[in-house]
Image 1 (cartoon, rainbow, N blue to C red):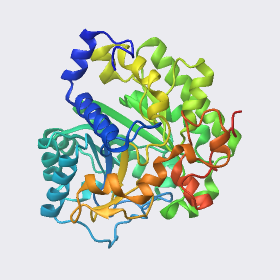
Image 2: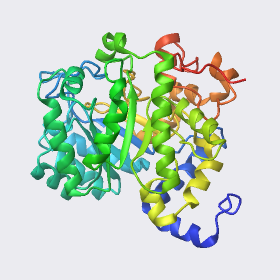
Image 3: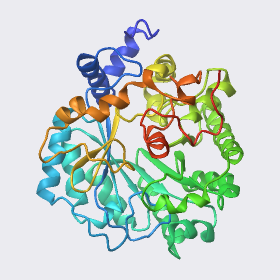
Length: 413
């Protein structure tokens, strides 16, 4: 396979020595065994799971798709149950586990859970609002096994950030949290920004601020119609504004790739960012599955440009929305979800094996059939590379294989 991708034996040996790459490759092989060769290709288990470790949060953000708050009363796993769920994920072959929420740092056993996952060989990341990350907390996270940190920053000014976070003073606390993580020196420090009509004019400033604070990666999110995000939909940007924002994002990403340094910029919930990059660079520099390009620092330091070549050649096999393919969500009570914002329980990891749910669930198997896409996503020439957000299709059309109403471009024919 590697020979066909133009990768020499020396690079192959180095790739196979990397535990994360090796685990991901094994999952792909298991996916072929379970599902046959498909386009796009489902893995044998979710490569990445985002776990809403708690529903509680010290903020009350306007756009929260989990409807989290300081007084959330949803049921949550005990520490012992959380360990059982972690072991279940490990047995299935999950490679990357993100602890999210709510605010995951509100659970005192977060460090124990991280250690359990790290001991099981999973790459552990955490998604936080940053307000609780003191120097001591950053140190404890690193010692427990966190390799990557992600913190939300929704503007370059306090009034802009605090508006969406619905909490005065949150900007100042978040900035401190980002600085503390930068000083700790995690493998990756990502800053995320949710795009809306009141902060779009601060996008460039926010990217620059994030980089100045030490961020190595930047994610631009869009408003998701779930939880309180439904009521916040009035804040959404126009299609023209969205394209302008994505172009600004891509310009910075492209510069980081060409110059070989600088913060890399990706988009979430907007699979059409891959299309924009593909068109702008004539198929040379673009992202795949929203968070992968092969130009990441962790790959470049070990394998130089070889991984980016592999990613480009396999783009249509792993591109687009990763629901049912390489990713799933998990609730605080252990229920597997198609994706984090989708309130559809596929099975509980205290009661069923993750592998069993992943392979046999009817909804997941329905979503995997991307050849059956409908509407504009079916007719678009970029359906294999982009394919649209499947959750948005479900919310707006009642069909996981319907068109993505958030696409600002329309089908390319």
